[in-house]
Image 1 (cartoon, protein in one colour):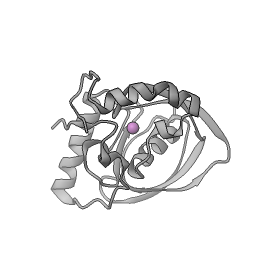
Image 2 (cartoon, rainbow, N blue to C red):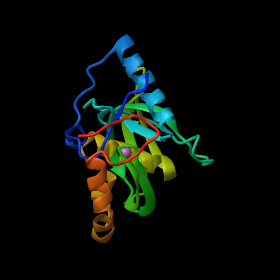
Image 3 (cartoon, protein in one colour):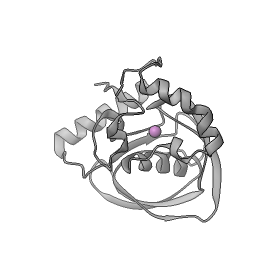
Image 4 (cartoon, rainbow, N blue to C red):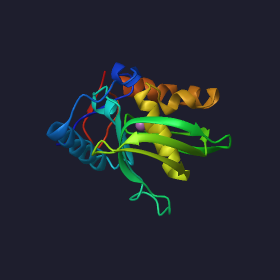
Amino acid sequence: MILPIYAYGHTVLRRRAEEMPLRGEELQQFIADMWETMYNASGIGLAAPQVGKSWRLFVIDTLQASEDADGLKGVFIHPEIVETSAEEVEYEEGCLSIPDVYGSVLRPQRVRLRYMDEHLQWHERDFDGVAARVIQHEYDHLEGRLFTDLLKPLKRARIQKKLDAIRKGKVKTRYPMIFP
Ligand code: NI
């Protein structure tokens, strides 16, 4: 089932997400809905708060968007960033909750992540490049942070009108959204 995506300005995007309460069939159904919702919106990542659920889960599929050798597809439950590289890189980001807004964000080049997969098996893995980038963006959603918080002040000022318009629902998308 395609779920509506909560837009910038909604309080669920600013909350620290809580433990995943679903198990078994219910969890698998929610994950299936997350994939369907993300693909329908042509996204490469989607976090549970973006569909109005304040739970610590996100899905990522960078394989479709990049021919990167380190393309990544997976479900991440209760993720923890345990280490980040000192080296940082700039990369242009966007977000399905903030349509038509893009901006360059500085983040660590590599991260080590501990997380559970869709079968609730724990993993600890290093990620680099686009994978590391999308992981950090989605992880931020679970902490109530958005990429627009990390833009340089001048750039932020430049997109403020667009953010206000989104908050008021004055934006068109090809996918269903819920406005605050
Ligand atoms: Ni996002």
